[in-house]
Length: 574
Image 1 (spheres, rainbow, N blue to C red):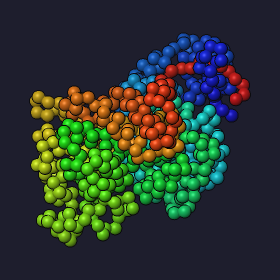
Image 2: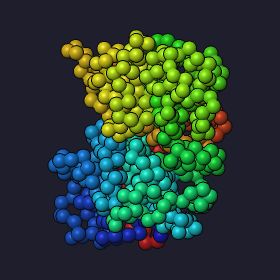
Image 3: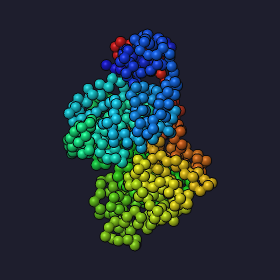
Image 4: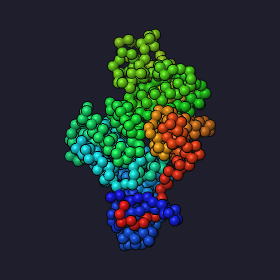
């Protein structure tokens, strides 16, 4: 049975919820609970008289009270538990609070604190959210999806828990990531929470700590491999297509050996994308576009190195290739040769044994023939920066301190305004601290990071803003745009359109202050502009609704939910 339905009164045009539940059942549903904000009429109609305090409060009262509870906590993990507790009781109040204090709470509901929470999820979990798909229940996936009892699902965020942030295999404890990601979709793009679904595809874990933890909530076995793994995914996709055929699926924190395969297998069968690959690349590309604008010379003049060439690194590389090709000066193959890809063993060279997604970015041995380095091993990061004359250095290695003084000094010699992106998450994995990077480069570097950092006070007369190259700039608007324009699939050109839209929002004054991305306080406007760019691109490619820009903008604006309480009407059967 549906938990509620959203309807419009044909006479008054009032939007209301048709609700079949009363009393405690209603109070315990986080999507429907209003706390003491139920009106006197609703209290009578839904058997709530005497179950609530006499006073009738407002949503603002609840936000103020909840913020006080939040401030009373002494650690970030306690604040996370407090916020998730509110989400589990009253989703409307949670999102009203999160929107009011988004910049302050973003590091709590998502990276870096969500990583701490996932490490302890089996011990701090208070209430289960979303669905858990396992090898033993996946054959009942249609029933599982119907069990959630929501009117319709437009957005699904799914993980198998194998590569949670920079923390590795956390199995079912990785469910904190889809829950957090959906919170950001709702806060940043206004996708209605009732149309979202977090999913954990729990096919086991290879984490011995979890397997030996008596409180671990997940499937207690080693991870499925090969065709057994893909059979579970396939059955899950079949169920989604049958029950929610127009839903967008975001693949989240899958291991690199599965992430690319899943994206390739399903990007035409179901509306889907991988934020770790495509979202990271497009967000970095947006920041790079701004940095290139500040430097005032073409992308083709940059010498670019990416340290850490997993799924995120390859996503950034492909986004840069698109920038280079669009500039009109080179082919795709020529653009790929402009990027020096560095993995755990050093520079990727022709003849190396590599992953399929790395093979397009192998440098020729001729490129390094005159470098004064040992030919017995691949050139290391410092060698590449020094002898490759690197001017743009991007880190996605997860190696704290990887960008040391020597490397930064070489980078500073290669360019008057070197570009330095330390994008690894969480903060403990960052390749370099912005303060150190700016001191060594004498304040000349254009810096972005993956985790949030405070502005840097350089010497006595300058404050430099540090842009967090956060996928929050990208994925909420991508989801909103694709859903509203009814896209049949998502393409790399849609991500490129999104990158340009984000960079275009950075004003000249903001660029002077060091911003490479718009301030996060403007995230709703950013999401709107990204969604509009995506919808336009889908229209041009014949993959989305054919409507003029003003109509697309109108539809997107109407779809962006603001937290407030709708009136309820009791409806016995839905």
